Image (cartoon, rainbow, N blue to C red; front, side):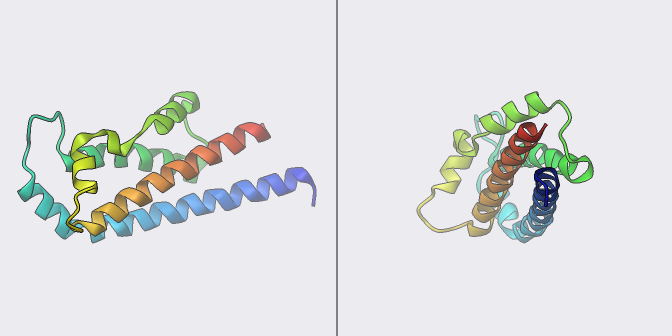
Length: 136
């Protein structure tokens, strides 16, 4: 197998994996419904610009959008801007997210798992785009 064919095959495998993670993220999000309701009632709006759930939603929209572009086309529009945004996303920089994520009581395990999956998808996409740049 030639190097070009191998790189093409690897890229296709990576795209399929991103698609798989995107589907899993949808399932994981549905599994957080009860926890999201509980969080909304226990942590109403505060002095923060966004609540915990709003922060997660904003990040989710960005990550899912980029993953959908990769799934559909194999590349991300405005790649440089998208890469900077993906690389600079730090979920735990948002105080509302870090307070809940690091709460010692063991609650909200589904939403914590969702955050981990979201971050994992973000990292996989960064590697995918980097590998596409090397091949170009």
